[in-house]
Image (cartoon, rainbow, N blue to C red):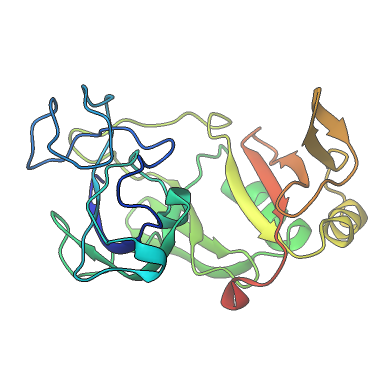
Length: 237
């Protein structure tokens, strides 16, 4: 989904380039030379998108609000400046696009339901035959607004691809106490990795700083999950 964000950025020095900013493509603008003050010109990398900053008047310390181009998917905080009133715009419009269900491919629905419901503590929201021969189980992690769905007998939608059981990796959960979460999973019989962080030499054992403590586990089919420690609950961030 290559949408744009309309943000207002207060740059401390209007004549200085924005460090790290690179030109990126936008669905309505061809890649190439970009008439953007304070940012270099060049060819947009594949899959990139525009983040646009604009505004009126001068900011504190003599800066002005202006347009910038940054990599697709980068948070407005990536710019390193104060961001006010970020709102979705461009190709998507003002409507929210919420991630709510992620299909997880499994071979045995009953086994997967037991694992996610009893061992991982997910809430089982649905277990039903939605059509003859088509069974769907939907489960939601505690406190999450996004669920997982496990299905059998569901034909793939035209033009889509399927993932084999055990082929889904990198799904990520966040908790505020990773050591307590690990102890809980171990007590329920889940094989969990040690807590690790990214250090000077790569992955190292033990907790790191904020946002830098992780552990991993797999479901019975081998689908992989990552758990990251967050400094606060989602509602407080």
